[in-house]
Length: 355
Image (cartoon, rainbow, N blue to C red; front, side, top):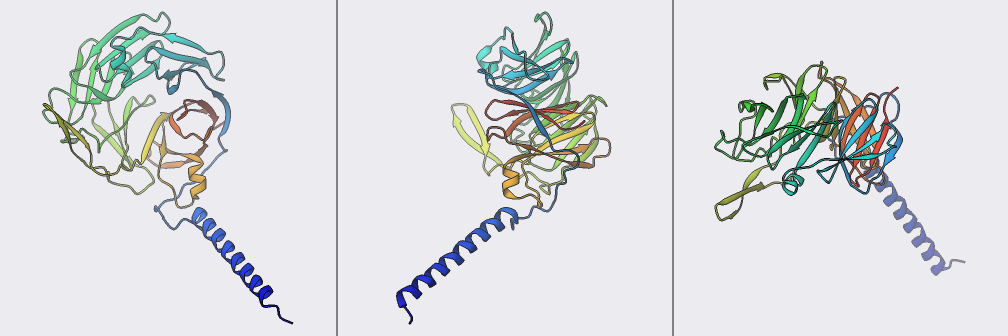
């Protein structure tokens, strides 16, 4: 004998089971077989990166300032304070430096430690300071005419910048070269001509390749990097593996206050390359573009670090650096076989990436 109520319940149960199965299948498909393809794949040769040490500080760590044979130096939110640790992130101590124009310096600064010197780039002062790493005595300082946004030292007395300059009448950025004795001595404005956009669409990361005494400029918003000599002459140009070949960022007018007119982006920013470093002739690049062979879950749970040979400009493979405390990488450097990462929560971590 048929029971209408029982049969109805069975049909409802079967329908619900099919619906659940369909939802789970669609979720799995969307996560691991995303229909949105970006047109490239990553491969992961070698060993899986292994987290070996971590470090947290009451002073938030923001960047790796440099290495010596025995120590790693970290930049903190406080421009007058550098954190030192050994290569196991233990035996920590602090370096306190007298910083001129403290509050203005704190708005945008970067340390570079290249033994036996400490360099402080106070980008909004704008000034560059040099101290002796051992005695902590200030050796010299140099001022620029306008603020700068990218900076590095290649030799004890030579610095390289990207920023604004009094010789440029429009609100754009150019490359600058100088010394502590003479200030800015060379200006390069043809490689990336300045426009009325504050240099935002062509913003990037200025790096040094110590093996070849060359400069590398990695664009934030497109799949390209420039290899330059120390006079900013183009030696070569490489592409990252993603297909984003033009910056999608557009800049327009902003708000006028008195005689000051501000500029802002008028389109959403799509950052392609968020952070990079160079070690032993290899460019390590943290990409924000998902490859077709990566699931959404895998990409969201890791930091994709792509590697490029700066001699051949060829892609060498990728590293997946996992999140730490659910935080993404904000800055990193590679030293020998270790990748030292700073995460967005201010924690530092060392990952073994080679033998």
